[in-house]
Length: 218
Length: 218
Image (cartoon, rainbow over all chains, first blue to last red; front, side):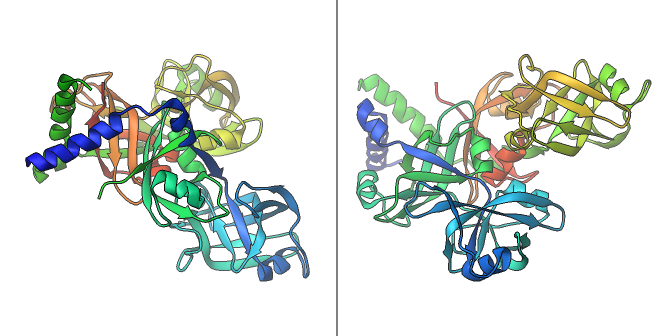
């Protein structure tokens, strides 16, 4: 190995090993937000499932500004199983999207691909049943790819940009690292690491627990 | 930082960076074995659940020598849910142990701790129902801590011993690393990395997929 390469490695290692002040380390923690199975509805599907003119009723605000959990729930019916009480998240969107864990997909008998939110072309289908009707979706069911929401100030702090891929380090007896985490930067975003229940349970993570972000190689 | 410490770090980094021949890397792959929810039964509980004198019927051999999936299944009944069709694994053991994912625990309304097999003191309880009777367990339900089975020859190849803790690297879009993996060495063991369905789904792992073992720091 060339001397220059060795020196570069040493510099990186020393930077990583140099202890950060406890305060700074704390401000660099990113709280975990665990997404349980949920559905985002289009206006058209809201009308079919809950009746014409129906508006979603807010149950509680979510951490990301403007997003809320509605009181409404739906039932998902797949070829091998049924899941009741799937929470509707508001506000209404341009198209319907369902986010499940792979475990949920298995119990329903479908195979939702891991995708970024909004990328539903060719994803899994399902039957959705509401209080007033049902919709048969040919696509729209995904496992949401893990991602971080941060505002522009935090993006500077972490030296990342919208679209960056980072690795998240997870402490604890079931700890490890999660690679290939998409960073999403927006002025209204609040710092949050979004994962599904499989990822949370597999790594022993709880809601609100702090994890750390690391730049990926290359 | 002291010069000696830096040199130690450099040596470790260089060792990690030195590329291994492709062939050797391949022989060092460890196949993933995903454990779905299952139950090991004591002779006493087998008699209660399936009738006096009942012997478990082998459905298929498992990868580890002597272990088999039985045709028998049980129903688990928790405070918040029921899971049917939970596979019995044979042969009969000294005590009953149920291995679930955290997701299963949530749907049943119980909180099984992450434990090594056999360490069930103070673990979660559950009601088990078979074709001829039911058993109420005050403990015995765990999430099995991830572990690697290897034989003594492989232990030498990997430079690990029974009880070593290693990190497993997982490739792919949902990849990352899983730390704190217990190594179990026994002459009859076949090379296998045992994880539960949450870990498999959270990291995008399939049965038989090859992962690599890395020594942990310190």
